[in-house]
Amino acid sequence: MSQQPSAAPAPTSAVATVSERHDWWRDAVIYQVYPRSFADSNGDGMGDLEGVRTRLPYLRDLGVDAVWLSPFYASPQADAGYDVADYRAVDPMFGTLLDADALIRDAHALGLRIIVDLVPNHSSDQYEWFKRALAEGPGSPSRDRYHFRPGKGKNGELPPNDWESIFGGPAWTRVTEPDGTPGEWYLHLFAPEQPDFNWEHPAVGDEFRSILRFWLDMGVDGFRIDVAHGMVKAEGLPDLGSHEQLKLLGNDVMPFFDQDGVHDIYRQWRRILDEYSGERIFVAEAWTPTVERTANYVRPDELHQAFNFQYLGTHWDAEELRTVIDRTLDAMRPVGAPATWVLSNHDVTRHATRFANPAGLGTQIRLAGDRALGLRRARAATLLMLALPGSAYVYQGEELGLPDVVDLPDEVRQDPAYFRGAGQDGFRDGCRVPIPWTREGSSYGFGDGGSWLPQPAGWGELSVEAQTDEPGSTLELYREALAVRRSTADLGAGDAVEWLRAPEGVVAFRRGDFVCVANTTGESVALPAYGRVLLASGEITETAGEAKVPADTTVWWTRA
Image: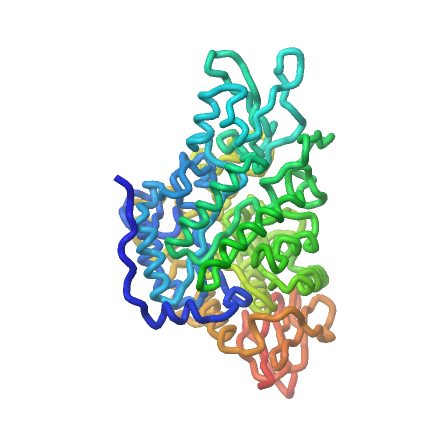
């Protein structure tokens, strides 16, 4: 029996507020929920949609504008749900379509918007189209919806080209044909269980336009597009001519990423989105060589936002930060799109741990580093991020100052990249450990049945319960920062900052009557007191018009 959404509730003032806020996405703070690690409602150790729904009041009180949900679609879970078997169904692990409907409605009633993940570059190998393509054999029209090719070599024993998977090894897998013989190869830029769609086939575009309408009709407020730089491949699938291709990502346009043809797809999608009321949005996960190429995705007739991965990868260094901030704002200004700022997500080591280690170790780290230093820098980096013009993203648990769990036993790891010999480092489990809600309990309030990844001892002292109403806690810092951001006219949307003269190692800028100063050095610095202190990530002292700002501390001032 198919799942049917329930009848729509009567409109509420909160829903009206959601729908009437013009250009809300230009200054939005969007909170990423990784559903399996957020809240477990049924005690099976796995987070679910009902768990998210019950915690929506927490997110409203935190002060965010929207909630982005990582994939919850029906999936064999070969890559944590990014291998989708049915784009119109909820995986039983997470609940039902009725649960999704209830979550969307409750979020709207609380004044929150819901953004869902969309995975258009590839499907699961259990997707009905792919199973049919395997069963029907070479020459089948079903195979044209993916990239099936004969192999090279005397007997077709070699892959069709030299492309490598992001998860390691060749980006091609050879199939056994229905008659039992070795046959064609299919392309998968990620896991073998994730075959890439052929977006040159009209049926693929038709299917995804239908999927968009399905979820828009359910009431979602937008889509985060996974691998938005993928989908279109260079004509003829040419060899790249080099090995260790993962190291080239982000440095050049690849024959399988950031091809110009993706923009035609997004123009079609934008026309669909604009048919719906309520200012629905698209957000691109687009890994590109430069922020200038990222700007191509957010031209007025394409997507609304694109993740700023260049900023995420920037070290806690004043000169580097100024450079990437300027480049970002300069790139977005000509296309009229807001800049976005992000410090953590489900694919990288949490910034409280990255900043606890020396610069240059990358975004996946298996070292705890100096925990106190990392937290101090993380708090300062958060205030700097929230002061910048545009939209900001918060990954679940960063408001608690959570570190990465770097000492997970190998036998409990579930990141698929960990089980492959090359490619990504495979340590993403550390940022996906279920978050703590209470000081005690079998899983610190995550659920009644433990958690799918083990939580460390002492997790309860970082919990929502432990930090709520605790002066100086990271949670209260976030709550206050988001409240000040929303109530301060000079914060939020915009496309420029006015840089102020400052000592080496200090970032200082003005936005109207608002001033932000971030001391990225290891020593206290003396600065002018720029007005009334709104908020600081650490203790500062002011005397005779001068402020002493400690190491790794950010301060917000106002002259108003």
